[in-house]
Amino acid sequence: MSAAYLEPSVKLDAATRMAHADFEVRNDSLDTWRAAEGFGIGYHLFDADTGTLIVDGTRVHPERDVKPGETMRVHMDLPLPGEDGNYQVLFSPMRENVCWYYEQGWPFLLVECSTANGTTRIDQVRVTTRAVLARERAVRSFGRGIVLPFQTIWRNLGLIRSMVRRDILGRYRGSFGGAFWTIINPLLLMLTYFFVFGVVLNDPKASRSEFALTFLAGMLPWLAFSEAAGRAPNVMLEHRNFVKKLVFAVETLPVNLVAAGLVTEFFAVALYCGFLLGIRHTLPSTLLWLPLLVIPQLLFTAGISWFLAALGVFVRDLGQIMGFILTLWFFLTPICYPENKFQGAQAEILSKNPIYTLVHGYRNIFLHNQAPDFGPLWKFWLLAIAVFLLGHAWFYKLRKSFPDLL
Image (cartoon, rainbow, N blue to C red; front, side, top):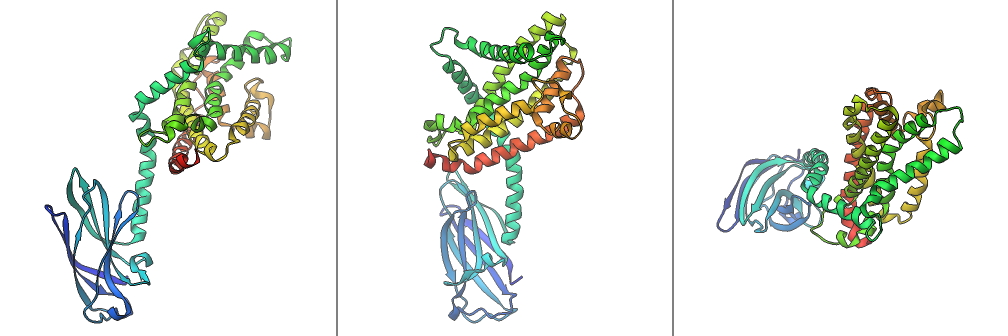
């Protein structure tokens, strides 16, 4: 420690928003503080939310040299901002045209204040260091990073619902089928894949109905994931007029894709249940376990979509690249072939595929009347939450640059 602050007192004149600071500073360094060398005590006023320096305040210079162990009295009057916000005032030793000692790790006197609805108040006065503040900011950022994604979605549920409805209806506006294409598209896609892999390439001795049920169960989570991940790289470009509006919550745009994919999956699940009733004449009771798979699936898809949406602003070819990656991902996942196709090390690598966990879980629920395997499932939950939080943090960090690039 190179300076100590004794009996600090900061009082506020509410009428004028003038703060009166009075304290003693003890020289705990090995050097003498000399006014002739530019030494003084000054203050910096920061916006606490953004870290922006607002005021480089006045200085108080010692009337005489302050030797190690000696003290100097400081009295300062400073006006606090009238605009609503949170502010920090840092009182610290400094040398003109040399440095501020709080930037060198010295302790400083911190005054935290805020203004709301024209009323200013002093919230806290304490002695601290930049390292302590950095740790506190890291803790707050971590907590905010966990809460903010969920908070954003919750606060904008109405907007998301409206945007998803607009997206689905607008996609098929003017067509004869209209919104029914939301059902027809997944049905035609699943039937096409079934024809190729179940009729053309399938073993003639195998039961086509069982293959169809096994294949389509694996397609259910893939449809929702691939739709959102495939569209995410271009979603900011498609809605650039919204991105440039200061009041629009751009974080909801990738979430809209996830919600639209969920709508597609909902109709696909309804169709699949109809197939089950037609072939097996019953629905499994284990359908009650489905939310344990759908929730982490949505979290994982949202995190991936946030990541791709932000990256797509900088890498315009990402949409084409993701088309190839999704095709490769599809064929590396045992959707159109049996899960026991690979053995040994290959099977071990295959089990690391998060979509495989979903495919296997869906098949357990719909076809085997079993609960999902909780061993892989809890790991997928952790992965989904991590991807969700990190994807939002990535998007949130980069979103300020979107208007300039779009």
